[in-house]
Image (tube, helix red, strand yellow):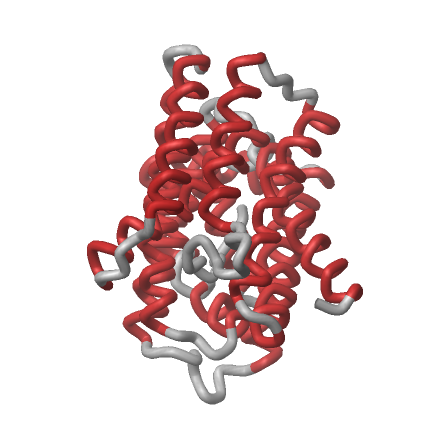
Length: 301
């Protein structure tokens, strides 16, 4: 890869990693379902500039499927999980277990059987998640961990839709997908969070809350996917995908520096195991062959 493109890949993963800090900050101002709805509404705004001409780059069934599974299910679970106590740094790490769920679902739905390295990576990573779960206090924090794992499962399903859709333009697809979630998420917010809480959030905006919302929509979603799509168009997926290992590193380091999150020895051990499992699955074999085919990332926040 050209040095400039390596820097771009690192920048994208840094933006995606810091995204978890932005979510935590935004959740101080917005209830989670409303926050997610507003995020996708802002991410869909480029359609006003680009126009609707030509429609989405894939069939509507894929746009709707990805929009509902990824936008509504995954981000509802992630945002609620972080709202009830899941730390930002651990969320950035646990969410990457989507790679393993994608491998499992690809084996079930597409007949893509995983080799021994991906299976070993899964075993190591899920052992790490188990260590983290044992360290989490019972109650909201443990419930938040379960929701983040559920978000990773939903992301794995969405990756199968992405693989079947074979989108030629990732950025254009993600803008069209962003049209789907706002109304269902708003309806869920009205039903579960209530008009009073929504009204209070919208009338008590702070610069930090608005900044977090804009960052998630414009930075992590639009800039992130435009840049990632550019890299995927110019380089093999097996060369680009390993950079995704930097996302939890940036996520955990930025949450420690900016939010003061601390890791106990047990959580640190769990994090090392999860990251090691990801590395076993994602990185190339010594002979140059990828350990496993990597899904195109759909979102890192």
